[in-house]
Length: 197
Image 1 (cartoon, rainbow, N blue to C red):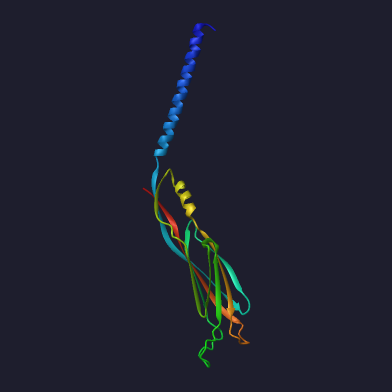
Image 2 (image 1 turned 180 degrees about the vertical axis):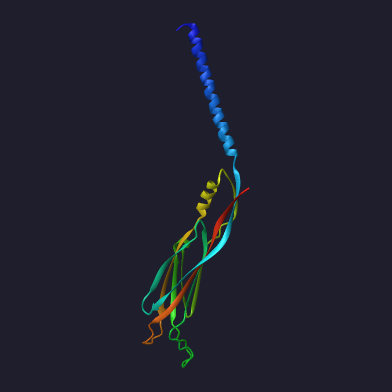
């Protein structure tokens, strides 16, 4: 290879190096420009409620239990109220004797997602309430709405399992077999509303 060929090869190598540096610099500038192009999003939480009802017959000396699935699509369930009502089928309260002949019912509620467990006894009505912290509105910068949804998913509590067990303690009357009960499960939740600004 003569001197002139060596100069041409050397010039080619220099051009190749300069071209590579230019491409790398352009890519960095492009990525930086893309990162700057973010949109400001505001996430507001809209409050909603739903209710499940159930009824049944609670017999003496036998536990009654069910599990209920509460759902709020893309939402955050933050409060659950369990209300149990019943009328004693054989209530002789105050008829002949002054003492209370009404049956006693014990309700036990477990909600694993809330880390909640509570028992309560009553004669005609039982109310049990479980709470979690409500989500707060927030603003964030993101490339697109999908990034915002990823953040919302971290806060999501869209399905909760509520276990209710009941036990009846009837007064010692031979013909008292149990009571009809009505159960209300009211749950409050928030769903996200996203607005770009």
